[in-house]
Structures are given as structure tokens and as C-alpha cells.
Image 1 (cartoon, rainbow, N blue to C red):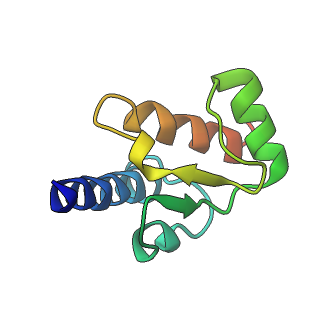
Image 2 (image 1 turned 90 degrees about the horizontal axis):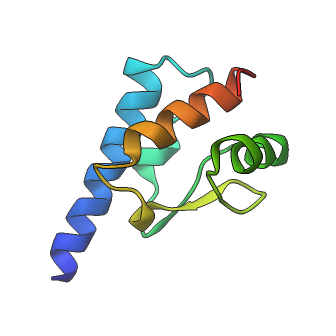
Length: 92
């Protein structure tokens, strides 16, 4: 059961990294998404990014950009990645 959860989080990290770097070409360095371990990840987003994500996309995280990887799944990963991309590009 724990192994299944760990594998799912690793899979979400891969999907998020691929969406940001390959699909959306989001500016910035995103390698840390894959290199970090555990249920949480620091995204590198600024407090300004996190504020606009909460206000305009209803994506919530701590102001220092920490997210719960366990909260991402196949149903919301694309929306999350697109929202982060829009915030970083100033289009949100």
C-alpha cells in the first residue's frame, strides 16, 4: 500500500515535470520537481505566483510555493501544470 502511494507520487512528479518542460515550455528550471522526494515539493514559485494562483485559478499552496504532491492526480495534474505555466508567464 505504501509502495503504491510512493510510486503514484513519483509518477505525478514525472508528469508535472514533463508538462512544464516539454508540453508547456514553462520558463525556469524544473528539475527539482523530479529530484525531490516525499509527499511535498517546493515548486520555486514566488509569493506573487502563489497569490495569483489562489485568487484566479483556485490553486492553493503555501506562499513559499510548497505543494502536496499527494494532492495531484491524473484528473488535476494538467490543470495544475497549465495554471502554474500561466502564472509564471504572467497570463493568469
